[in-house]
Amino acid sequence: MFDEIFANYPWEDVKTSIYAKTAADVERALGKEKRDLEDFKALISPAAMPYLEQMARFSQAATQKRFGKTMQLYVPLYLSNECQNICTYCAFSLDNKIRRRTLNNAEILQEVAVLKEMGYDHVLLVTGEANHTVGVPYLKKAIALIRPYFSHISMEVQPLDQDEYEILMAAGLNTVLVYQETYHQENYKVHHPKGNKSNFPYRLATPDRLGKAGIHKMGLGVLIGLEDWRTDCFYTALHLHYLERNYWQTKYSISFPRLRPIAVGTTDNTSLKSFATYMSDKELVQLICAYRLFNEEVELSMSTRESEKFRNHVIKLGITSISAGSKTNPGGYAVEPQSLEQFEISDERSPQEIARMIRQQGYEPVWKDWDQALEVVS
Amino acid sequence: MTEIAALTIAGKTFSSRLFTGTGKFNSAALMEDALLASGTELVTVALKRVDLAGKSDNILSYLHHPQFNLLPNTSGVRTAKEAVFAAQLAREALETDWLKLEIHPDPKYLLPDPVETLKAAAELVKLGFIVLPYIHADPVLCKHLEEVGAAAVMPLGAPIGSNKGLRTRDFLEIIIQQSKVPVVVDAGIGAPSHAAEAMELGADAVLVNTAIAVSENPVQMARAFKLAVEAGRLAYEAKLATVQKFAAASSPLTAFLED
Image (cartoon, rainbow over all chains, first blue to last red; front, side):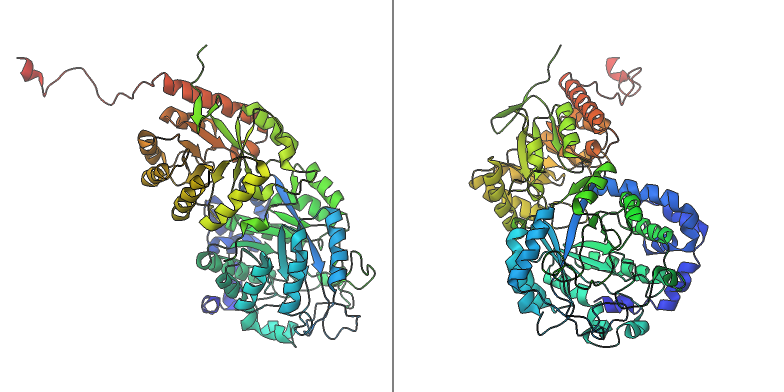
């Protein structure tokens, strides 16, 4: 299990060793064909900044070789904003006085109709954590309900047990995203003071449970802005490295959500910059390229949290899938468009506008890249 | 002008020995142009990319040319069971018995599973499919596949998408020497010179995708591959000169026999 590996990497040691990397370490990493975790540290270190253009070139070439000149499109479908957790950064946090809503079957189908109209074939189901109303039975029903409409169903909800994942996979679930948020064990408690989510070890072991369940694809990541991003992202790479060797039949993707202003918080972009944990655009590009140079096969995903201009440029540097036209409130597409969003969308272009932009960049937008028929659950 | 010999697989004759893939192109229209330029007559399509509901951006609508025969592939399946299921769906949707059998339980390097592939091939042949399995350059496995009725074998030259060329050359030579069914070198062919090399070795055909699709100019690259495959085949048919490994001047060791 990953916790045994994790125990060998104390946070401060990792952080120190990343910041101690030199230009020589970066050059050695760039010169290699297969790069290891120490190379990854060098590539995300401040010492790699002067090599960003070279990293971007390598990253673009490696990504095109593996994924071609294509860009996958997916869209989130928020089913519920009910949540029993307190997370200091999230609009759905239990202590936020917002109207709570969980979509019923008819409402889900209303939303689905809009997503199909937009052209989507890959949907990402999202909920908060409210086990009584939005537990496994609800999720199973929702997956079975929408399965006829999508060739690929992903899910981003609370961590579950292995047998619960197996139930949902049998219902038609293909991919599970479960972000650690942060690998800083002590501060994890500070960011997640109340609710099931405050159980760090259970969350940390989730990818192991998914791997044992035989999930087709899983998504990893941290929420960038909670802790030092370089250190946190090293743990993501370490986790990926471990998972690939142990659950070699599973596909992996990584996301790098940067904290955005939330509905009830006071943070805006200017005050974000004053945080010690702030990540600049340049650093995000560095991270994307470093992930690609570390692992040529991992999918890298980018949401509408990022701005129009940034997304236009960055999709050519290593990204393999993006969302577009997203709503982060349950019912946001059709049922109740005016309700409160989980986080503010930065790139508000429609899926068709995004598809046009992708084509203008010389890439083919791919709506369908899976088929339910390919997975026979025994 | 000498024409290269036609290739026959399962009773179907191909004048082009360049098979092509359809993934990784930056647009379906460009893919169509490149495939036309390549002269290919057998085009493989991933079932997972085909929209069976038949919407507008469907990849199939760009492949409606009489010279293109479709070769559906099972890319994405992890077991023989999944492969058989997907194959039946492909047959129904694309109305062809031809199938490129790909089973790669490892989504990282997409390496084929020899055990599951042999199992699936045997079953699919019984179900009437024309099976072209994608496999390692393993001569014994190729013989087993031949025995269960595979229409051809498709050993890899190097890891798929790697563009590294014929890293398995020594094994390919054995396979070509032993095989009773056509040998199609698949995966790893990154340059026209690699394709020519495979043809010179005596491969019956090659399958190329990434090297054409990801090129700066896929149409021109497709044509380059067409020429390389033809050149390699012509050279093979004309009997390449063997590399002289010995000198023939004096005979210090055997001269006494002439005394």
